[in-house]
Image (tube, rainbow, N blue to C red; front, side, top):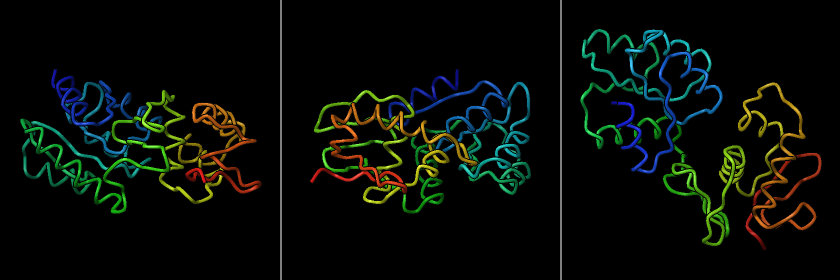
Length: 215
């Protein structure tokens, strides 16, 4: 019930949320979807949240906010020392949680944009996971969105395909360039362009992809 209420509150404030009912499900979701922030309860059915925190820190530096009814001072300090970025004791106000999320995001990436990414007629809201092209909403798949958002965050720069495979597909040791090419093809169709007649997505042969506004 608390998780459902929390999702409703965060969604109403423009956050895109995912939930997991157990520690192992949560760890799998983190690896697969690479969230910006993790809200971690301690009373999980399969593992204690402290054990999950150690597992998260072994694979990711994602900001972690512990949200728990446990208010033992020594326990809070131990979790912060173990890698938690913040600790919030239940019950808490939605505004307080929102402020904590903003704070850990600023610390995690001081250069993180505070509003939507705008490139020409493209407006990409990474919090709400929405894209508009010249004022019209685009229906993108999750990977199409992640690909476009990553390129928009580096607008004007040539982004290597290896970086896209690492950051978007979580393949740190590389993978098939064809994966990127297929998603770029689908994305170009939705942007009303093609590889032969690009508007936003420009291929730099042998190097990577560059997102720029139309001339």
